[in-house]
Amino acid sequence: MANSQSGDSVVDRIVRLISAFPQDVNALQLNELAQQAGLPLTTTHRLVGQLAAHGLLEAAPGGMVRPGLRLWELVNRASPTLALRQAAMPFMEDIQQVLHQNVNLAVLDGWEALFVERLSRRGSVANRAQVAGRMPIHISSAGLALMAHQDRQVQEEYLRGFTDPDGKLTAGGVRTLLAETSRQGFAQLKGVVDPDTWGIAVPVLNRRQRALASLGVVVPLREMRLQALVPALQTAARGIARQLADT
Image 1 (cartoon, rainbow, N blue to C red):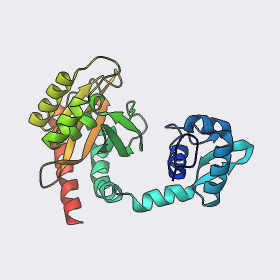
Image 2 (tube, rainbow, N blue to C red):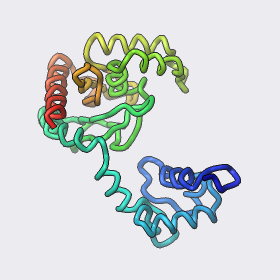
Image 3 (cartoon, one colour):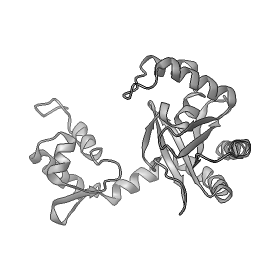
């Protein structure tokens, strides 16, 4: 039930509050949190107190507020990506052991790639994909690999509403990228997110040949082992799919 001047329900305001922490920011001052959530300071103070009592938020000294351990516990306990991450981790470790570079695992959420796992090591190239971070489909190899292996109606809905804030790509250009990805069986983007890196991703397919997830690597732009990289990723993706089917 909505009981605020804006018409938001209590649930709406709680979701806005919990979602207000920017990526890579794990604590905010109470007034900053209210501003990020678009809520009055008094409302924010009251809701933070209630959520902190349940361990979903933590009111730290100095007026700082951060997500609580209880929130992390509940999300990870019930996460639909838990089985995916468990199935993928041995294969991701094998890929990283061979490449010594970043390996990531993503799922499609709306019109974005949501990264659910990432392995990196000292000396790896820059990788903008962060765990629980998102990237638009058209600028990530993971996103292209995921969308290129969805049902046709899903692709058409995405393309009908496609816009590029930078004005570099049109819906027709993205359609071409998706067709190329589908034909090749993998997606590649050179120097799009970072000028010195090359993103390559393959889909993890279900029995209907639709992408459940994508498995990708980020390597230096000078990397020339595409003929070796793609088969290794595809073999790992098939292994993940078999593991998921078995469980």
